[in-house]
Length: 220
Length: 174
Image (tube, rainbow over all chains, first blue to last red; front, side, top):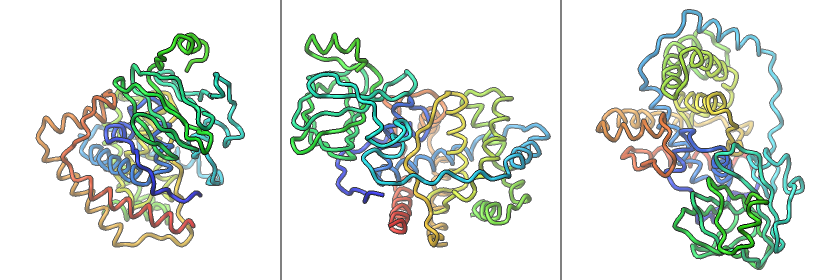
């Protein structure tokens, strides 16, 4: 287990954490939230306090009548699974990818199936529901991503290295939330190749023609 | 506090009487919650059985310094709802397992449980317009940008308690 970083400067906001707790986010967004919470105890505690709110809402639900045999059917379910399946050995080895992302990749960085998308940048799309997309990005140290705007919401979580854009400096654990009003040109820090998880609920809009055409083929 | 001791009896002694009492209290509420979230009565009842069975099976994972029993049941029900109604995976943060000697401090349990009760009372006394916004966020289909996360509820004290509990866990894991 890596030491919990106290240096996270860019956090998730309450609206996202509440939606994560309520369970109403698209899968890709749930993934980036779970990954950030694995690295940030402050946001994890905030998310769990929204769970407490969910618990109190549940407690205050009006009772709904159950069928007469509901309890005995539940006991049957429990009995049926009494032969306890040993829990998978908790996979807490330290690495670049937090556990929720490793679950989608099937391992750490060495298992990522990168595809080049130009200028040394590589991406790997992760399999989530179509309401939103999730992809890992590899940006060589010092490289600038094409200037782009957003139609919907894009969130980017840094996993290795760092990038700088008009909004600030983002290092491991930091998450940038970009809405349609943000137009930015992220540049990877010169010291290390940058690896990020990026999720979006609408395709990015690139300013230059060529990336725009490429976008149709590359699903970025 | 009442339900925490039930959970401990279920965990340590596989106590069926404790489970039956907990079931009587929570299962109808879980069913109501699932129906409000869009399940029909039959599906909601099936799903409630899964949730309550999971409570028994996962009782060793319950951490009373971070969650009340209601909170914990809510998280199980929510995950089941995503699985069944929205048909998608629910990524969860990396697990923080209990170390072998990390039996929680009674005082920490009491504080967290009391603060959750205070939250429940505050929720009951919210003006109805505000309460409706929270209901919509949890049971409706609001996107995160439509959610008004300013609840006016005392969540800060609970957050600091959970934060401390997380720090202790990380400390024992070293």
